[in-house]
Image (cartoon, rainbow over all chains, first blue to last red; front, side, top):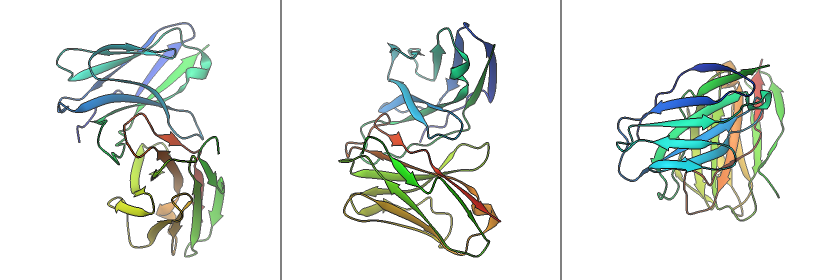
Length: 112
Length: 115
């Protein structure tokens, strides 16, 4: 399984854009990049997934360069409620029973 | 149900006692996963079920840990002779059998404290 590296923590302010970059140098051809969000006392929640280029949904955008060795999660105009831990995962999306392998995540603190 | 339900939400037990943690997955989800999360840490995979069978038990930390799943639905994680290092939040997730990193829905977990 491809190992991921992401910053331990980031601070931001309400209304700002937050960008979290994840390194995955050993990503395989069949691997997808997925981000989960975890609030205190809750289980992780799926945010966004991509394979290459750019993916956008109502919550975030995911930017993946051509070599796919890194990816950047972008949270536009964050609010206090976006304070959470964000996990970057890499794995074969099509593999049955593919277990998620979580790293340490990035703890994002949004200040007023 | 609408989501993954875990019970109890909190459990305090004395060292050496056995505990059972329960997970009710989303109806129709055939894959079920147990994870453990220690304070301030990431998630550690424990075991995976496909239906009632467990193809991957590689994450169980010792033979004190066991899990079963009946009727392709409810799963129980049992920890025998609990130790203080077992204190953690135990999370359950379910997904459709087709797998995929995005198809996982997690419960809110059981916070286990061994005193």
